[in-house]
Amino acid sequence: MSDYLADERTLVWCDIYDPDHETFNALARELGLNEWAVEDAVAESERTKAVVYKTHAFFTVYSVEVKDPPPTDVSESTLEVHRISGFVLPRALITVRLSAHFDMDRVSRNFDDLGGQERGVGSLVHGLLDVVVDSHFTAVQALDDGIEALEDDLFAEHPLRGKLQRKMFQLRKDLVALRRVVLPMREIVSAVQHRRAGAGASVELDAVYADLYDHVLRAAEWTESLRDMVTTVFETNLSLQDARLNTVMKKLSGWAAIIAVPTAITGFYGQNVDYPGIGTVTGFVTSTSIIVVLVLILYWLFKARDWL
Image (cartoon, rainbow, N blue to C red; front, top):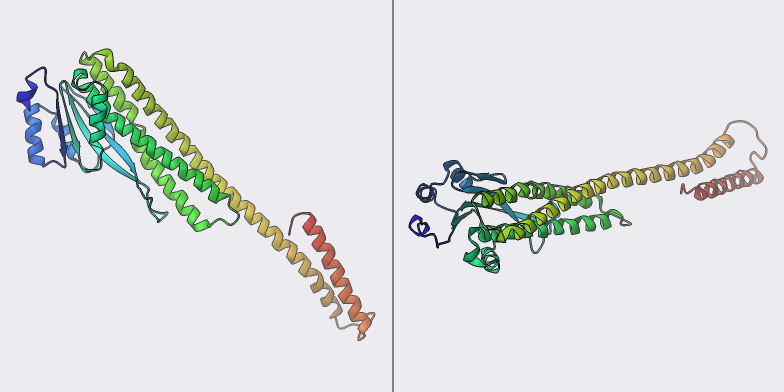
């Protein structure tokens, strides 16, 4: 690769999938890549970041894929995250992937649409970051649809409480994971733009990079709004549970008051003392009539106050 890069008319793109550590280190020594960046590129877990060195820039980003078809288990995530790292040299881009699930063909098409080799490595980096940002939009849209479905379940006449809470918890987990990869993209695009300006790149791609940065901001703002929506749904769920509990308590109190009337009357007539109508049918009919009348009056009053 160093022989090809000696020619100023050459643009090199090297895409490496799951590289062997020794081979990748040999390539890094040949091109003078920073050893710490090389370690970060092959590490099992690394945060989204961008670092500008003297001779090159390094970034790590995550694309997000929505599972199709969605999982049947509501407690399973609907998103898959795939990491890709890149080393940006003046006339070369080296991409390192640990997952095969990344649309490199689309990156190539974006590169061609921006003018291909004539626009230099900047068009290639833009094509890559554009695919990543578009995947973020797709994931945010999927979570937005999930929250809308959650709202429908929340206000259903007979909501499934256990399933609803599991869906809500999983949505919050997916949103946290998505925010972790979406929000730092602003620094990634800014660092790449700064590197291009420092390298004396042409201004022909400034407009498309500005548009890319706008897309990144929109994705970040949309993600933040979803966070507020999930919080609102969670608080609404608690409020509805409290309201339903109050309704149940009102109904129980109303029925307890209705049952208390016949209990009081029959208990009074059960005393071991003489009272009008004792031992006669008239006394029994009188006490029963009193019970029925008072129960109907209480039922009508509680029903009018929406207690029953």
